[in-house]
Image (cartoon, rainbow, N blue to C red; front, side):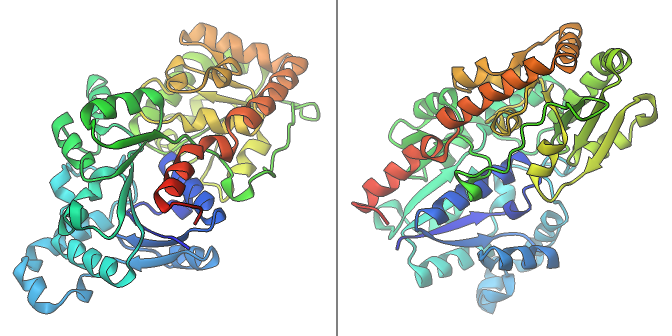
Length: 415
């Protein structure tokens, strides 16, 4: 059995945002294919986190500066390091943090020392970094003398994502240049891109590294048996639209645009409801929720299935950002007709795009909502189309094929 040591500061088991959902699905897929997984977790865990990890059998090695020898702590100036760590512990979400970060912000010498000790004691076959920010952990292991192969899931091309946010006058969680990102990527043997165009850019940045496209498969822990109920709203008095997202600038911008430009017309003409789930609802609650009739913010949900089984039509009005379009993929996976801004088709297979209604103009977006709210046959037809797309494009065998092939080729046989 081959062992993979993950390095991350993302509490992916919470599945509260797209990045966490993506990592959770990859983890479940690797578990299902016989890999032993360990996790070097670099920020604090809550008591609830400990319980959840125990329930799911996740073996967590928590970053603990006290585990490093006293003389080493003194050598790196622990008095200056610990305040930085405490500040990072206080931020649950990169997108909502007010603190300015650069790659150097993640260079924690004590973490590097503990990581080196973990690798020396565990002898993992692979190291898997969630985001490039932990690339510096590999500095203790010169490439030619490594006992493991190093992988990174990029999630986003961060320098391009930062540019998009800056163009919208929105803060981005990290300031990073193309050259800085390329230097970090060069530390890895395998780079996971979320979509084909990002993979092409990465190959230009680091032409001597293996790059594969790994998409997203919702519900990987229930492979072959997703908890999906195709409900077109026949037994409801009102059709329910839904949007689920974390509280980052792109998501908040998108749902505010929909509420301000589209929702009034949709609700007045159809009497429909809008269910907003996830922490994006916190930002909406801080706004003028009373002005938007028919809107219900439900906050965080324990199960993503609960959200999709409650709604009839999904919307994705996000207008900027990078990375894989998780909200679009999830809606189609769960058999829900989806109305989306064209931004949310970037990097998706054509069959997936063909199953969506795409509108960028607010008037046309609202009309698409009204069209679906008044036509049950159309909703059911699109739901059936979604099911075919799920089987062809969103199966774990399709999504994770290249990753598994790379691992098997590297292992010279299955794990």
